[in-house]
Amino acid sequence: MSTAPDAAPPRRRRLRLGVLATALTAVLALLCCVGGAGAFFLTELGNEERDGQANGGCKVGRAVDITGQMPRFAEYGEGQLRNAAVIIKVGQDLKLPARGWVIALATAMQESALRNLANSTVPASLGLPHEGVGSDHDSLGLFQQRPGWGSVEQRMTPSYAAGKFYDKMIQVPNWEQQPLTVVAQRVQVSAFPDAYAKHEELAGKIVDALAGGAARTVRIAGRTVCDAARNAHIAASGWTAPLPGGIVSRFRTAERPSHNGVDLAADKRTPIHAAASGRVLVARCDPDHSGRRDCDRDGWPGKGGCGWFVDILHAGGYITRYCHMIERPHVVPGQMVAAGQVIGLSGTSGNSSGPHLHFEVHVDSDRSSNGAINPVQFMRERGAPLSGAE
Image (cartoon, rainbow, N blue to C red):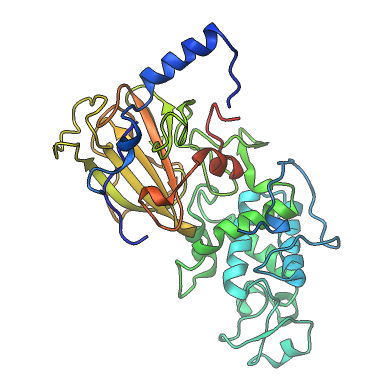
């Protein structure tokens, strides 16, 4: 447990009764971060649910139906979602893992807003079925492909365009582990290489809605499984659990309402993985209540501070925080990291009574306690559940 690190830029399990419950409570009290209600302020800090985004199960192997009823998303109409279904179906027919479908969708969302676009400078395209007219060079279709990708008619055919995208995507080395924006840019060679990342979150939700929660799947040893993204295996959503240890202290309990994250059991020097790709905001020693920055030694309850810690900003304005590392983090501010990359080693620096990882998730790019949300539900919805969570 820790006090929360310094200020940011703008913005059940079911237990048995009796002796077991008493013993477990005692263990949690020893392992978790302690410090009381005031302990979780950093030492230098003083929607409507849409049908398509409702939580559902994860079903491996569910084929997308391109002719059936489409889910509802505020951002896209039925025709655009049907194009999304075509993109997913092509990926399924090619037997590509769901991570590829998410990458392809996010790319088409950026290139055409999931519309099959003709082009005012390509007269032949205007006589073919289309859902809008663009004017970017001689680019056509869902992926805004230029003449080298195929004929006018081919590029204006969604299934063909998706297939060509996938053909080039799988040629990117280690594409399943690379950040989405890196893979998309290697295929598209866009003038705006960082623009794809912002669509990853919604692309995953669309894949979930159209393909039975497939963004929560991960390929392990050649098999596709649900809700098992840990040990640097990356779910199709782009997320993974930071380490495999189970939860020993939960988010904002009645006893500790200012505990803005969860504590995960870990021996000293257990590798900590970035939960998703992103940019490092902070990587340093958090001062304790006395202003000391002595994170190279074990901490203790009441000391204050997060110890050695890292904050990472992800697409969608999400921030993840990793506290109590044993030594200086393996990353530096401004560095881009990939999902699953080792960013440091677990320890017990700062306000801590034993080795573990304190893990937080924040929304709206808000590093303060106001932005903190329960990591348990958040990670479960992305196919990277934290061990010990129901």
